[in-house]
Length: 241
Image 1: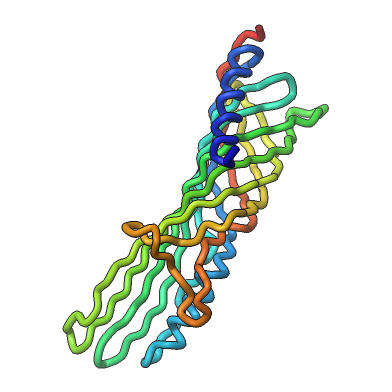
Image 2: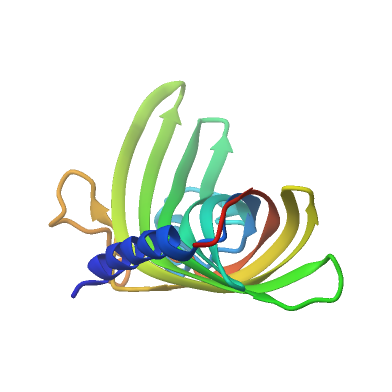
């Protein structure tokens, strides 16, 4: 059974169990920031910069940036099971400018990550709730490259390239939240581990992949890194069956 089928099967089982024994349903929305390794793309940037016949500098090299997530959870005793979708993005720029013209090379990477979610709520004597959680899912990445060169006010190069890849991810973490009526306000942190061999493939020709010009190695996304953010959760109490 493929990883994709495992995720779909797990999602179906979560829905089935929720219909049978769920005590309440909740929807959670998260916003935060992440650190993204992007080692292959950083190496790609360095090679591009070294090969250019004029002076440039890397003004952005895949810095930490915003990410968002939405999760629907079903409580079963002291655990929550659910489905989650998250989005993360980052990018880079190489630029150079002098009296004769201007050059820049931009890369923008987006990651769409549907997955299955599990959370264990730890006992507490206060209103502050602590839980440990994990997410496992698919990671769909898209890469847009834009290279632009103007010489003496004339566009010499203005090219755009698009690539995509698919991998898997696992993200363990923890959450601390404080309930206020039907709402819970929380802070969360985790560490995303990407796995799989999905390299960037041409969006229009999957047989063509992005390679490091110096080594010839396939270039892969690198979403591995720390995550941290804030969350708001709204609960819809239900009857236990």
